[in-house]
Length: 359
Image 1: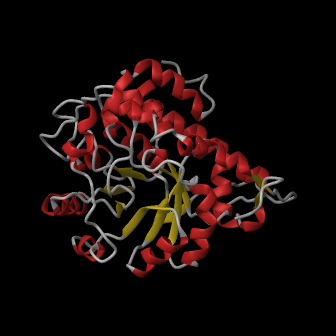
Image 2 (image 1 turned 30 degrees about the horizontal axis):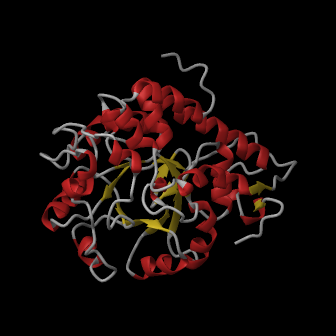
Image 3 (image 1 turned 90 degrees about the vertical axis):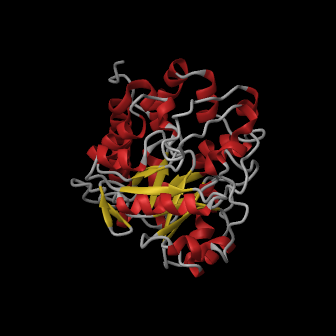
């Protein structure tokens, strides 16, 4: 398909819906319970206002930054999402090539359609982290970590907000069966309708702060904790050796009626007090969202659904186009804000929208 007419990320969504199987669409797009948090993730960014400074030399906007010491082309990364193969036959490998060409970080899911090693081989020079679900079978989980380290992944992103799966009406209602070979890192497992969490057995009900040291002992990779929504847990993450905390509500797919991540970003940043990097995801769609997140103290933002929809529309070329669109939006935002580099954005560049109290 022609990509020239797509000038914003949300324009991929209706086009992807036409191309995806209804069950695949539900798996990607829908949220938990009544989807209050799913909707709030997108609209939450409009609750903030940018405060631009003028007469600043922005001739050379430079979006480069570092994430855990690795330079990336902009403070935007590809968040982990399961089963890219539902969108395109090349799956995560196509996403990896597009991300590497754009110079951005990709986080590869445990529940990927391509193996840890295949994704690494698709873009050997790309910046890449591995997202981990700690399963009941700890030996299987440890083997995943060891494989990721051996394949050159440079950090481990432990998702901590999935003791059980959220209640997702459409996934339960529509028979969802990606096939026996869909889960490249979990061979022999498939999903049919309501058996999702039983079959995958991803429920980390036994994982606690006290057992987190076991996960850290499995590799030398820095550990990022994803799924933090409170200052209390942010402080505990630092105390238990996290190299970074990732503010996230799992895309509105877990517990409904929790805050949008951007609305609690400030309290998490305050709680860690500069001791570790902070990232955020949830409804990021436009360049101003990136600037708002950085002004509130995030080191970078991540997003997933827009890249899945772009992948469904045009494979690797679709993801590459989505990344170009978001890069151009972000460059223009930085220039108009009077902040030529990510480090120039401070808390003074953002305020709550009129009528809304700061948290």
